[in-house]
Image 1 (tube, one colour):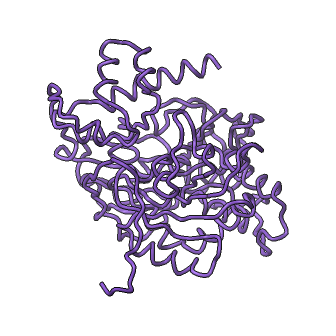
Image 2 (cartoon, helix red, strand yellow):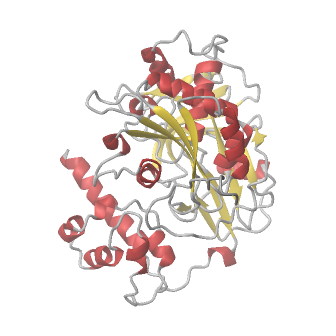
Image 3 (cartoon, one colour):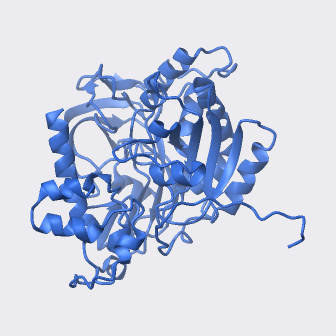
Length: 451
């Protein structure tokens, strides 16, 4: 390196792990659009987001059009649901979701015509004439939520209380989970829309700068976006180290800004907002094209599927139909995991719909799904050394085994981000993360009921 050449800064956080990425199966696979065939059943759960469940706005045997709002709620924290096809409402009943819950759902028979509702109107003049309130209303009406997995309504996230001053908006393009590659492909193929969507966000949050955070294992995406924002004063690309869980909000905020999100806090407490790259594109699509959130890019991969790839799917498409459209199975999967292998959820049925927060589905063979037997803790301290939240997983696990919820709370168990790093790094293969996740959710439910 020449004396005058500076080494590029790569941001990161303390601790974390380096799992085998397993992205080679799909990282170079362009996004392929799969449209559901005529006559297929589309299922729309009325809860695809964090917050209140929606009420149905349609009735059985009613004709609906593509983009039509079919569910909504008056609650502050909620997001409407739209039909992603045209067709006939066949039923409104509880249905199993891809996350294993049973939710009241609207079932529509696709007529294959994809006739658009009158609400879909492109805005050729973009967002320049729109006020902040009008932009937020469009985002709300489009049903946009956090598409990185959390599903928090975006219009609420972009409406911070007066005492919370935001100076940094981070677009999360890390995609640190092994196997998943949709964000990478989105950044390569739709980079211009990311920039335009972020500009819209910065019109809403006028006090903020924009930073697009990308792990250094995505050189093509980094190059594309750096070139596009080279002459934009308030938008920059930050290259972050490829490390898990770099994409979790608290860790990403710390890596980019050096700020520590407090225990029990969220990024806005330290002046930051974090949005997934696909959420930013959904905002662009709603403002410029007048289209509500109706599609999701999903990675289908693993040794059991015939054609691993990144697929643009209509929300509401049954996973069984999506797999068939993608070429079906090569082998009968021994395990199916929704999301990544670190934080994902195993499911037992493919008769479940793709929803707003579905990022990927992994279809593992028997060898891939094998989990070594659990052994006694050897007191090596690796879980403590690597926990990105600075917790002591063995201590929390001991609290759980003693059924001592008071001690679990005292030892900051609620600060666990359920990333799975402790289970991954444990040489004894203790099910630390799984145990902590179970009790943590019980304690969070208790707090919610008290509130």
